[in-house]
Length: 93
Image (tube, rainbow, N blue to C red; front, side, top):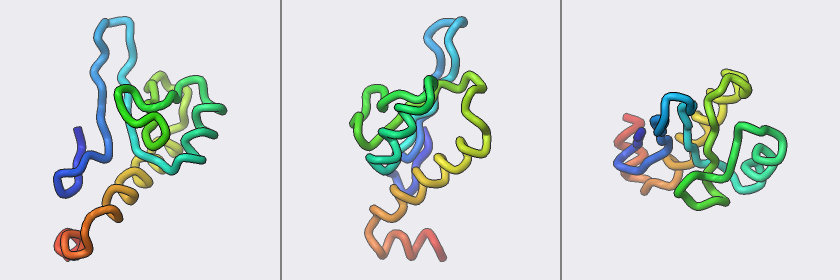
């Protein structure tokens, strides 16, 4: 679990079986999440999360690393911006 100021922005799920892939769950804008789920077989609504605001990506190599990096940064930014201003300022200092 990856957090900023005690709020989760990413969750790396370990496979339950050897045959399964790692899964990464990230927060994202609702419309973009819908499009990603529609366009990528490896991206699904958030596993055990709010299905509109979170996506789960199966790390099987089908999603480009550059897109993964972009989605991770976006998730961090969304959670960071939801923090109180005083907390954001403290982290940014």
